[in-house]
Image 1 (cartoon, rainbow over the protein chains, first blue to last red):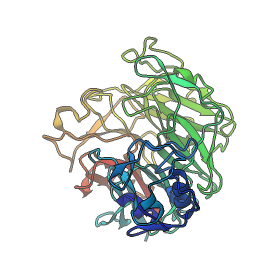
Image 2: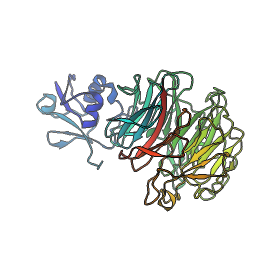
Image 3: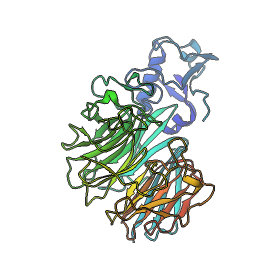
Image 4: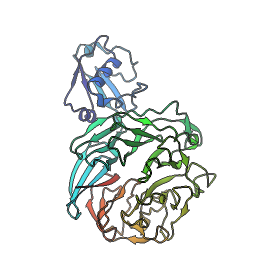
Length: 98
Length: 371
């Protein structure tokens, strides 16, 4: 089970509290996690990545295991602790005032 | 007794203000979608409890919401706005060409006749239509075919912000775009023509009378007389008596003819309202006095309406979608400010009071009458 944390506004939009747990088939990649997240919560489509190009929105960051994974390729595998459910995959709104 | 519902979009959420038809005591609900920008909310004239809302964020992009119970609960509908084909490029601030790209929805305009049909005006400027209550959106690409490569952003972006349906002719619709101008369709949105003859943009364009490129801020009409249009342009208040074929200036004695919104009295087709703003570089009322101006002559002769509005040290703005009228008698007028006040008059503008005064900056104001 993959653990995903969402920023406040996306939790509200999706109607969730706390972490989201997702079943993701191996290999567990960035794209596979986002596919599973958007399938579970269709209202999140377009809020994290462009619906047509799949490109990450500029003010969204992906963190895990103390690393910034925002610029990793879509099909790259996530760190083993994330794939094993030991660490969350963190979707974060960029620090940009507000 | 009728109920009055005012829908307010702000920089940090939506608010719903309700009163009875006396319009003296108001209750405030909100913030809905707290923390998000609500560029516009509007209810269906066919089913007033169906409300469409444009919710957006610099972080998370565009969300579209629909309520079927008057704003008590909301459902996210489709936020996928794909241009038809390769949209190509438009002019940028520096005169270069830049690719068209979706940014946000500025306007939602429910159909006058079909509860499931709604239009959306977007940035970068285009018009979309949904016939399934927002579940899917289709562009009306004939609009961009009208010299779209010459359109350019205004200060707020290259946005389609005004959609006006002709209540007597379902095939006719008017839209306005900053900075492209005004456009009309006579075939339900398939083809469009620019309707900018008579506009003078000598301060902004190399050709003051260009076919497209004008920064039109808002257009209003009276539903019984849809061939008469009133326009607040970047500078100049304009009038057309032939559905936009030609325009003439009716700024008259206004202290400034720069401004954003324009509205027409619900029962008097020649009574028009504007809120003069000092200039394009100083977006606040002249002399620090917040004044709505009313013309009972269809323009040119304007009177200041000040009773209940701040007449010193007031430096707010009133944005293009932030003024509207109700259909009660006497007609009610409502407007919101960038200072977070929503002012209302229940006697056609003679006297004003703040319904609420400490909201986030107000982006849009719409009003509904409920049985």
